[in-house]
Image (cartoon, rainbow, N blue to C red):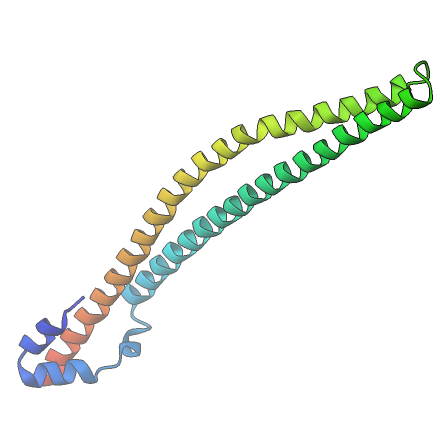
Length: 167
């Protein structure tokens, strides 16, 4: 794209014409149409990468919240388990319901597995986020390059038209 200094350095009659030409005058030019298509593709790829990263960050937050919820449920189950056994012992040493206790113990073990697996899941998400962050940055650079290419093309067409009008 042309800088403001470059436009000022043009002969006055050319720079005035350049400034008076609307960018939209070149909307149907085949090169502009193609450049806009490249710009749209770059914008779409950037948006999709950013949305994917957002969904993964949301998933990370959900995993952490789920871990915390499971930890709380596990603690409540442990307390319930101990109280249930204590209550049974108060009534009769021989009347402790082993099957009910095993069921609670199994649920606690399942919760333990979830809690123990969470750091691995979070580490995997973090690795994916690093890669996605790179992809988002790369796509943002693609958008910037497409924007610059379109602006440069339109400026070149405007300059050519300004020179033609001045001739």
